[in-house]
Amino acid sequence: MRRIVSALVMSFCAATQAAELDPILKIASGSNPALVVFKGELALEKSSALIGDARTQAVFEAVFARDATLKAQAQAIGRPDAERLWLVNALFLDLTAEQAQQIAARDDVAEVRASLPNQSQLPIAQFQAKQALAMPYGITKIRANELWALGVRGAGVVIAGADTGYAWEHPALKHSYRGWNGTVVDHNFSWYDGIRDTALGTAANSTCSGPSSATACDDNSHGTHTMGTMVGDDLANEQIGVAPDARWIGCRNMNLGNGRPDTYLRCMQWLLAPTDLAGNNPDPSLAPHVVNNSWTCPPSENCTPVDVLQQGIATLRAAGIMFVASAGNAQLVCASVVDPPALYPESFTVGNTESGDRMGAYSSFGPAQLQGTLLLKPDVVAPGTEVWSSIPPAGYTNFTGTSMASPHVAGAAALLMSAFPTLKRNPEAVARLLRETAVPIVGNTQSCGGVLPTFYPNNVAGMGRIDVFAAYQRALATIDAGGFFSGFEF
Image (cartoon, rainbow, N blue to C red; front, side, top):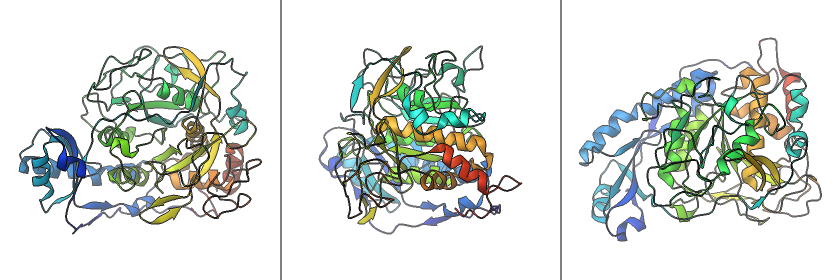
């Protein structure tokens, strides 16, 4: 059905309850990083009525309008130095326990939440170095290569990742990096570093020299591996990416695999409107079409199931950016999709399968629970066991986990958007195509949340393992002469 362009009406949902003060900040000694979230959440539901980049522009204008107000609020609390996170109507700053209590008492504050650096574990289960197959099995399993044969390889689509960073000079990634024109590199608007402290150090294989890196880098190898699965191609022997002709951009939201609310939000804000390296001149016309998120934010990183991250993800979704997230690696345990961003309905959540189309040994199951409501998760599953991809500085290896599964889905989304440009900025349609053409997995006997394993969708495999070629055929059968979908409601 052809979508009608209409005015995007924004309204404020005024909160009336008293501000929530994070218990950690009540007893913390000294000055600690915190998020001050102000009242006045935007209602963005009508954004889906807009077509293409107009959708992104409208949402950006609505949320960026809060920047001036945040600047005034920072002045009002005596902290003009506070970082303004207009994406979620929040300030990031260091606070003592006394200051946190004073700010929480203000009528315009919704919550004051700690954003402390803590050690957690990346959602990756195994590290194995093996000889690759002629082509990684995940490519053929989701039938991406059959779209390549038709000339559909992701051209015209921008993929993003938020992760441990990306080694942009890796031979499988360099030519598709948006900041590289074939002769010189310009990282402005194609790379952003969300890390501001060095508390956790750097790894031996890090290509990052420290925080706020002006050069795209990876401090862990995890991010480079995920990007390889999305777009990797060394133009010779290593065809590892699902959508090799797509362009990619990236943001570092973890330091050695450890993040916190402010690092995740900083990257989400940049994804809506990429900026120069100094964080200035946000431009929503340069926003990606799909973003992969192979990370979780557990309680150890000061995240809770109901938190400000959902606002950020919902805003990206409203802006027409497809938000793909890994389910987590709880080793086949029911009700283990518990951490952001996987448990949110705005995230397209992905579980892990192995080469025989069975569930991988490392994959979290639903149902997810949010504010007392049970949500069926994951949405779909994809290859994530022993996935061959790129690592810094120029190598390759196999990783296992849902971190490796979700990039397959992000790449598949890019292929569909490339084949049908009207799918850009329409994550609802892409998600439906991938869900409704997914195939059942093999041999699952586990029931979670009272849903039988033979019934789809279920809380083990969602709608099943994605089949991007079938999704393409479904779209092809329902598209009209104008490039829109006829008789296929989203």
